[in-house]
Length: 498
Image: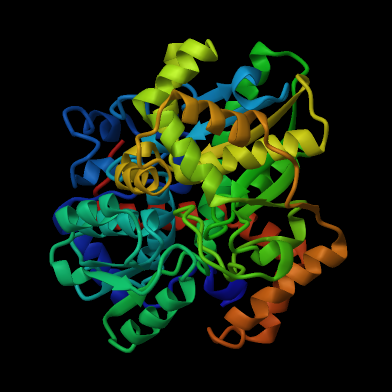
């Protein structure tokens, strides 16, 4: 098949027919990618079906909320995706740092549910996944597997979450509530950086014929859904800010690499605005920066390898952020002493300070990286740096407690808050930052060989074809074909009515 298995054509008609039967029986309709990119185009009947449905319940209607345009209550439709503009009084830079809010997505309060949907739908509509017979295996460092379990439950099939044992307790609490069987939560050794251990477990699970591995790090549909849906949402956010600040220029899109799904939005923004694309990783595990390795706690960004779906040759900057910074901001933004310091001593708007609770650990890391970007390129008030908060602070209460106990055993107070504010916001330097030359891009690209060719069975030819931007442009251009396949599937189920 073309594009490493991502061709919009039926692979198995028998399996497809079974999937159609299942979704017809349970009455589940599938939104197209373009409808999720522009929810105003969702049929009124589907929008009406959402009335009275909680965004946190396993109801098939919530598939139509898997987009960036949910309002703050996550029940209605917003004109513009949710975002914050961080002022110079907080960041120390004149450039406008804009943070898109991912915690408005349904069921998991994180935008990874979009990636999970985007990865499963192509398997459904091409006859590669039968909800009646198959189990969906979701390898992840936390949010993607939660999104996968949610999508699986809606489709009436079993979803298996594979994630490191050291992830936040809140993730496991959520999973225990959502899985149909506790054995569907598979804990692998280590923490955030131990992605290979996840792959090894998936290799073992793949020996069971009914298990279908949906690896976000290598599923190109993850790239496609973020390029098309997240890219357009980020563009809409920037244009909304620009409308209030004429002449504002989008200088950069900053994103922790993770599975390299979200950073695909950077390709869209570069095409629309000429924005630089900055990839973020932990300095404790500097894979892109120096072929390095290690452990860190910026939960949700993975490490020690280069995802297959990362368009490395179109990435402009690599930035390292220490987990000490992201953990510190998580405590500053969500403790009584921290909030009091920001409001009373720094005179920040209380509404803004309250809104910082919408930013999780990886979002804090992205903000630090955005500040580094602004300082390195001398960006001023004419420039904007756009980044993403994948989830909110709700997933990290236990992490805040552990961090406070380790570093502030006498209790985190306003003096400590001032130190964190000075060091991890106002005092951020543009260290651990590389402007990627062509040679540097090739070095990072080549690092992926050891994971994907030597370990995961990708051929050298398949691996190398990703150097050419024509490969990625082919993926981008495939959205209309995928939409037609989803529409054809819906026509067979009869589950979507205008």
